[in-house]
Image 1 (cartoon, rainbow, N blue to C red):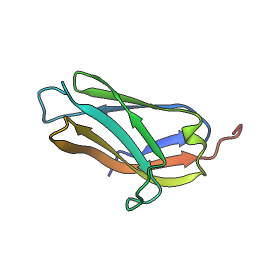
Image 2 (tube, helix red, strand yellow; image 1 turned 90 degrees about the vertical axis):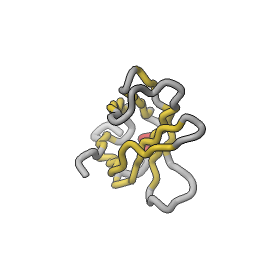
Image 3 (cartoon, rainbow, N blue to C red; image 1 turned 45 degrees about the horizontal axis):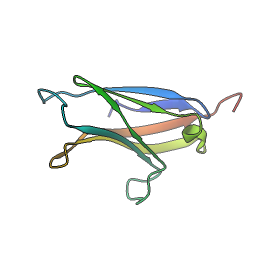
Length: 100
C-alpha cells in the first residue's frame, strides 16, 4: 500500500495527507480513524484534520499513541455531509520507544 504511518509509543505525531481528484476541500471535514481491526466498531484513535487547500494535517497526541506497540489499521475520510470519500487506508504502526 505504501502509506503506512509509523510513530514511537508515547510520542506526538504529525501526519500530512494530500488529496487529489477534487478542486478543493471547502466545506469538507477530514477524519483520521485508527482501529485494531477494520471490523471493530469503536475506533482507538479518531482525529479531525486541519485543511488548507488540498492538504490535510492531523496531529495525534502522545496520550493517543500509548496504545500497545503493534500494527493497527487506519483510514482518512473526507465528508461534506452529503458525500464521503476514503482518501487513503493502510497500517498505523506503533513502535517501541526507549523512554516510553
